[in-house]
Length: 326
Image (cartoon, rainbow, N blue to C red):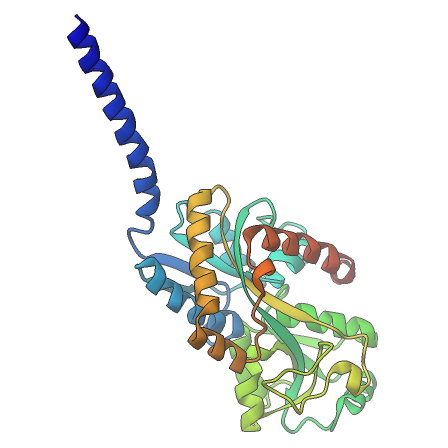
């Protein structure tokens, strides 16, 4: 009898030990297949470019491919709704930004998701300063002339954007509120197509993230009037800040970040966050992001908790600005 009990005890101990090994092992197996990263705009725009740069390195760390899926429509909210409803198993993620995860709240009264309630924050990927841009033959020569021209011709000029709630739309809404004008808005399915229209001279101006604009500015295919940050950007050292150019009230910087559906396990979030941080610390990734004018987040801004706070603060910031626009 004693030997049976001893054997049973030994088996129980072995089983418990085995269980203790299995659970961590299961967590460590993620990912076992490719991951889909939803980008809520057309290919070629800033969110798309940043996503591809960072996830390219993350895929090496995670040992599985990360497939970019561009889903356009409704200022990014179509794709974001889809991501919110996806399985919370870590295989569907989204690169959101100030538009999809903050400005969308006041702009879309019937928004099918809530940025704080329906997503798990993973990591902030990059900050992206906003520029005031125009077609290369737009008459104003500098920002002061731009302000005067837009005020005098508000009913004639138009501003391109990537859809209601997009960064390009929201930032220009802020500009227009400062100037007290309401020009015609021309929506596109992303800032990539909007930039193409600006280069072709089909639209007058736009407010866009620096990532999308540096190559075109350097090529002389568009005009850049100012950068809406407190300091000049190393990628465009000759471009004045809005304060230097005479419009200090216009300050705007967007951001891109990674999110997972609500309920995704903390272990998966931790794995993704670690891979994202490793990417941001990689010299090649840093070089590519900095060349495009991105601001790489520092250590204290890279945690899921810091991203959650950013989303909360951004919703509070943009709600009073954009509520009158709805």
